[in-house]
Image 1 (cartoon, helix red, strand yellow):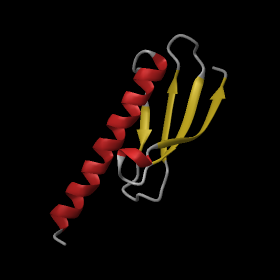
Image 2 (image 1 turned 90 degrees about the vertical axis):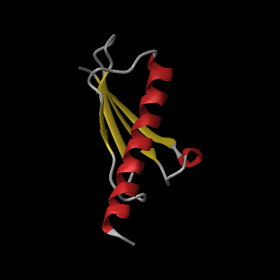
Image 3 (image 1 turned 120 degrees about the vertical axis):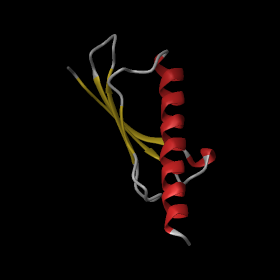
Image 4 (image 1 turned 180 degrees about the vertical axis):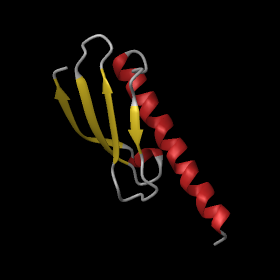
Length: 84
């Protein structure tokens, strides 16, 4: 497989996962947290890690998602909250 195609697929996955996370958090929080950080590896087997501080509460949230590549495999695996 050509290298540019591999890179395109990896970037495509990252963009899709980022979109899913943002949609999930916007629905859940009522808005997109301004301090949002999404860590998405190119490896489908690695979890997606997300952290942000709730704008209204100041509580730090650390979430972990699984994502095998399609929207139907996107799921919240764990969440931790830390007082700010």
